[in-house]
Image (cartoon, rainbow, N blue to C red; front, top):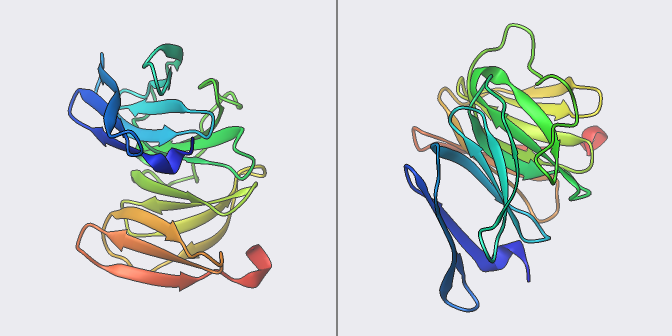
Length: 193
């Protein structure tokens, strides 16, 4: 199966996932906390980020819990796989992001954030093995190298929360949407691809 065959919805204290090829709900769990971010991995794991910073991993088909990691610094609002699909980046409140393995185990001791930046992050998009775009509440989109933990570029234009990011099929452009209804299309400089 593929992550594309599933549709997932997050409620205030529930998570429901439907298998679009079968037409049935394959997972429904009332959580101890408030889920904020979600990702379905290629090996059919459901990764959930919570308001209080917990990250939990479940088997998608059965809902059986696999792992939980407690992080109290920030809510985890969005996830993305890195290019190798063996790790993922979770982003959240106060400018923090962290690299995790598929068992919800942090790959670093501390979460990362740009000095002086404390605005929330609502969206993240992978550009390959080492690069992610992160959309911030302030409207700025930053291209990070997740290995060196440095910002490579910043994209300015939005004036409100970046709620979504999407990559073009050719990988040379990305689109961003904010909570005021604005949609921008950006060219990714060839030297960073």
